[in-house]
Length: 299
Image (cartoon, rainbow, N blue to C red; front, side, top):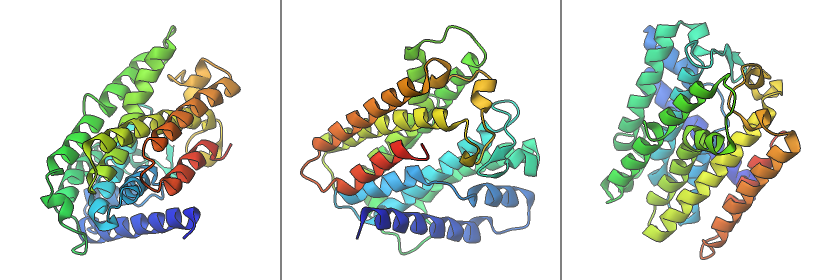
């Protein structure tokens, strides 16, 4: 199977799984269920769950053992988008080419829908919707470590810390590259790193190699956010164009020109590829191909 076909297969699997989750858990007429359904079925790129499945496959794992965690990570990502778009944070009206949840419903409903997705994500790992999913992850000694990775990535030491720094530095002068790196590391790269780490944890993988996936994910996440900052001026991202620069958000294009930003992103991709060299006992070629594609997207 070609690398492209493998990624498409993963996308279809994730899309199908989300559809089944909605049918079983959120297919009700109450307002909260409808808001969750609206947010969760918005077609995303699925970068984080794809990385979980790819890293799991790289170390010889089974897609069914990694799927609950991959879906949980997508639920957490979806929650973060709902809350990011709220008027009290980024105040965005478009997400994935559609009205944001608080515009389609209202602010209170959006807030609660995000809270529900975050909370339900942790249930997903222990109680996945699909009985075909293996129970190996749930029974393994790595279950607590998987939860720990999600707590660290989503909580006050991860995304929320990055979001708070991002809000503090919005429309303020004097941000340094070190501070900007700290924002991107916590706001974006920590969850992407957790996706890679959990993929390895969901398969038989030694502790030393798991740490390599953690570092790999951090560099992917840093590069991914920088490319996103560059692409902010393009409406095909499915959200309001040029919004970050207009609001003077903390982003690399605020400090450097496009070529310098691209060079910084490339340096992180090169570091990620170096991490793959340290995993040479595995077939890393599908993962390598996907990582490179993230750097080149829509440029």
